[in-house]
Image (cartoon, rainbow, N blue to C red):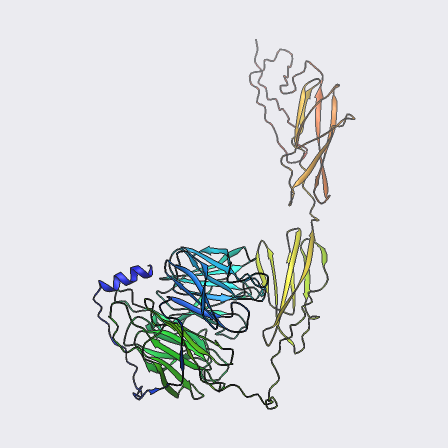
Length: 622
């Protein structure tokens, strides 16, 4: 459903919403106003249904990117906020992303043009982003996109794209090259809205989090399913039959400092739902415990980041104003400062005019996070709330109590290439692989008719089919750094073909005899058939003919050969009769005995099969 259609729908539907209350939770109604955030207007009359912020022109300061339905994509340059067009087209998404898609050191923009996912190439370092942007095709979005993010899902050091359609479909596009993307996952999901990413299960790959559930990344085997894991069904099982059902904002962060990712939810289009975060000891199958932060209706902004530079993750939320007045004022923009365990929060309000789908970014490059947004999807201004957080100390930091992060990649050593005979067991040995701290996992991946994955430091395997098999060893250390190496196994064809020269024959001098080797076979295929007719002459081919010049019994030899040079032979006899004798009919006469009946039985033997004629007779007087 397009955003315009959603607006029409809400104006024609009477909504009866059940309010959701969390038992045992008490909310402090005394919200502290915070006037220390400076309001900075980017564009007074402009508005943007989506916007984000990143350093577009490479000057070290964040710029603002915005897009509107049907209008296209623009950016505003810090500090004077001059407006430049990236592309004029039918923008068809409620989200936008930025990232270095081509690994050239600058930010590119990812979005939706009509029903096509595209990335727009920043012309830096050789060009000027104020003048031109090149569009690159990613794939078909099949309609309106409500969620859009980029991440390296398959750990190949290239950015991939995840797009959520408004409804029940999620698409993940793998970047093969900057010009070629392929859909590695098209997943039917619970409706309707909400998207975030993060490593929920601490296995060094990026998972996808949606409204009340998450999808587990199957890396390193990206052909496997993305298994759906439930967090809390109340964020996806609303069933009042209106489009506002199951619309959520989603965020991922470690709120309680236990080193594990937690998940946050709010309802973006309904009242009566809390802002909650969830923790678990086992994200794949364990219970998720809910903690309520606040009660805020129509919370269309839900952000996480350390706003006061105390090393703890804080939360930002905001309500928004609808064009038809159906959402009552005020429209608070709130910050929840974390006291250390995610259970105690200091709440302040920086505005009561609202934000629609805001973003966090360090606009002034002063080390703290600012809040970026427009008042709503239909009205401006686009503005920034400048964070007054104190700058980080310039004095020398205290001596670290922990070792610095391990960023050294391991070295994968898969071993030497091998050439073996078919049906021979090989032994794969990755024990020579090394790492500055230590290798913790080994993955051997290859294709032998189907995709195979082995997970030991040393493994064994038997190839039954001849061919050339590249096997990739991926090693990973405890910090998640990975490295790969490839060993090539060449499997030789040692199976001899089966030669079959056909039935033994009886023919006449001057007649054409036909020889057929079609019953011969080989595991990989026969490449040549050679015949020795026994009279000094030869022939080649699966089916051949030959004419004998004189009578006699000739031994005919067939030699077959496959592509690997394996050979086999078979022989048969051909009895060539003198002209005038019919070899297919033998008449036996005994004086005056009249032969009353003749029965001829051909005995076909598997080897040395001569067509024999047996004659049975019955005598009678004239």
